[in-house]
Length: 339
Image (cartoon, rainbow, N blue to C red):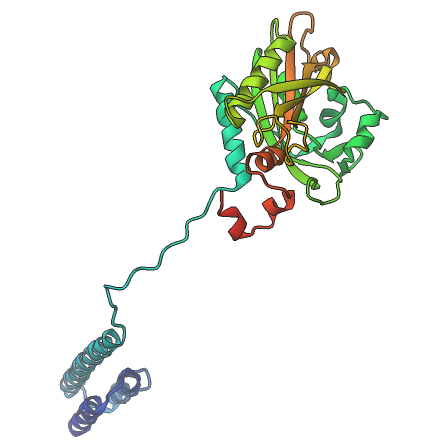
C-alpha cells in the first residue's frame, strides 16, 4: 500500500510538471483527487488494511493529497500569471490617443417650447396640472357645454373607446376637473397629449400636444385675458410683438376669440412665412361660459374667468421656422440636433 501511494504521488507530480495548460491541470486534479480518483480508490480499500496499520496508511494518503494539491495550486497560479502577462502584452493601450467622444442626448424641440411656455406662465403665478389621456365623455364634452348631438362633436373627430370613454380631444377636461375641486381662485396651465382622427400631413397629426390655461377669480374681465396673452406673446416671440384678437366661436367660452401675433420673421411687413398678411394665428381664447362654471359648481354671478389653448407643435414650428410637423416625430438625429 505504501509503495502504491508513493507511485501515485510521483506520477501525479510528474504529470503536473509536464502540464502547460490549465485544462490539463484540471484533468489531473479530477484523475487523482476526484470522487473516482486514484487516492479516493486507495481510501476505499482501507477496509482491507489491518486496524493497527490504518492510521499510518491514512496519514500517508493525506500527505500524498497535500503534496499533489500544493503542486497543483502552484502550477495553476504560475499558468494564470503567465496567461495574464501574455494578455496584457496583446492589449497594449496607447494613452496618447484621443478618447472617443460620448454623444450626449438633446432636448426635443417640443420639450424646449413647452419648458419656455411653462416658464412664462409659472412666472405669472400659474400652476402646471396634468390629467388623464383616456377620459370620460362627460368631461371631454358635456361639462364643456358640448352636449349630445352638438355639431362640435363632429368637428372634433374623436376616438371613442366605448360610448362613455374617449381619447381626450383637448386638455380642457383637466380644467373642469380642477374647477370641480372648488379651490378658488384658479390659475392653471394644462399641457398634454391629445388625439383627433386627422390625416397625417405637414400641419396635422392624429396625436399632438395642447397647452391650455385657465384663470377663475372675482372680477376677471376680457381685458385681463388680453393683457395676459399679450405679455405671453412678447415673452415668447420678442418684446416688439403685437397681438390682434378676432371674434370666433367656442362652445365653452363666451365671448370667444382667436389671437394673432405680428410675424416675427418680417416684423409685420408681410413675407412668405406669414403669407403676406404680417400676422400669424397663434391660439384660441375667451371668457369661460357661465354654463361651464355652473356645471363645475362655481357661482357665475360671483366668479368669472378666461381660458386659452395653443398647440405645442404650432409654437415649435413657428419658433424654429419648421415647415413640416412630421419632422418632429421622424427621430432623425440630423434634424433634432440642430435645436
